[in-house]
Image (cartoon, rainbow, N blue to C red; front, side, top):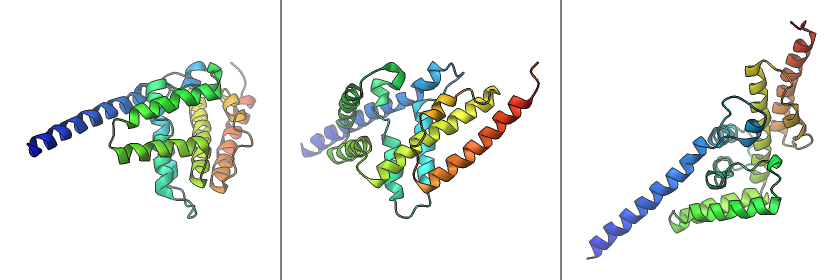
Length: 204
């Protein structure tokens, strides 16, 4: 009887895990709203964005940060969007309402996991939302840095340097971590050079 109960519990756990993975898999099909609004062709998904953020966290050389925690924060920070979608500033949803929706989504998601795992994921999301650790603050800057790197790549792909300037403007003054400041400085130098070249070319 105990064995049958254990097997039934295992089946229930597997069923919930499968449901969780399918929900998270939706992130592959949720486009980043900012790019959609700017008519970028084949815009990246939320999952694409989170993956490169996780890689950026993985390659940090800041020994004062818990690298493993940074990677986890990057993987969890937008997870709620598999249910609520990518709510952009242009959607004019109040910050409190956005937080409420995402909080409800994270509770729905984490209830599908074991108590310990669910608690871990929810607390990671909450840590990022409240910016309550050095790691959360670092990952927030990675979020902004990854966005402007992607903007630069779209400008290159479209051969329209400077088209997505407003994404750069939205991050002005938001970078303070030395690694990220250096990376952004290099990115902006390359981008500005492309804009200068494009401006000097005769128009057809």
